[in-house]
Image 1 (cartoon, rainbow, N blue to C red):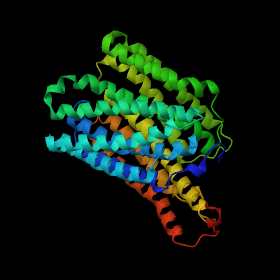
Image 2 (tube, rainbow, N blue to C red):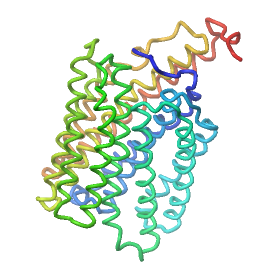
Image 3 (tube, rainbow, N blue to C red):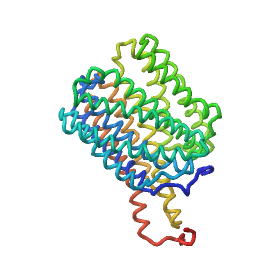
Length: 428
């Protein structure tokens, strides 16, 4: 593992990111139950209430929480700046986001104005709090490396996507705005997937692959130009979608090509890593590369099939690409945080990162997750598969929840003992 160039002394308290990481699988489990009690014919429409609720249980509840936790953890370490009041802000924002997400899910299902309004306020306050302190930290950065630049751009897309999301929620409170719902929803989903999640993943990958996998570093062109080119593609797609619909294929192709190039680069670098030991996290990176390629190009051609494959695109991009990478990174980041913080407190006789998570359980979780994705795709042709896939997904996320809690339990147990080395002499 390479730690060169990291400002590890700026790392936030361990539970600032952990509270986001530990909550995320719970929302995925909830999404699994919602899928189980839904119907494949209903889920075939991206605009059905069931689809919207399930999508946001995963995008806000799982993906959003993991990404905000990662920004909270990685920005100070990579940029050498402190996030103001990070522990207090993350604690309050986390509570607002948890209750805001639950209120939104229940409000949409029950068509309750009270819960939708509560969600609008809670999510608005929670997201604004955490994004504001992250933005304040970014403004203090003196040396913008490729990862920090990508984080900054993704935060812009995240903010715009979030504002669109609040507007969409408003359309369920005040029907006068409902006429704009589908147009805004389309931009909201594309910018959320490719602008916020996609660009953030690319930026984090620049650091994570060489650090955790001792893979070759990315070339300067990739670091300096890809995020900019993808951002241009997203703007081209937006303008053509709004004002020249027949040319939106240009923006789609632009975006897909650069994400395909990224997926290919990741695959090659994972194959060229200096320590070619395979584990579950490597499998997740490979699955995400395949799903990103298939999903991106299916997204291009979907409009020629009257968008009948758009849900399949969402499964490939949201589940196969983004969710796979998020799970894979959780398996690396959480043990690393536990090891790092215990080591910094003077504990030397601690389990290694590889010993903190049961490998057999991690493999079982991976295969159940992949089986669920395959089941969800074919459930549109064989409806009985939906409930089987949902059960597989639920079990997969339950195991993931256990796997991410296990290192934290190790942290709490060891912290109650006396350190091997007294670090108080080094504290200012």
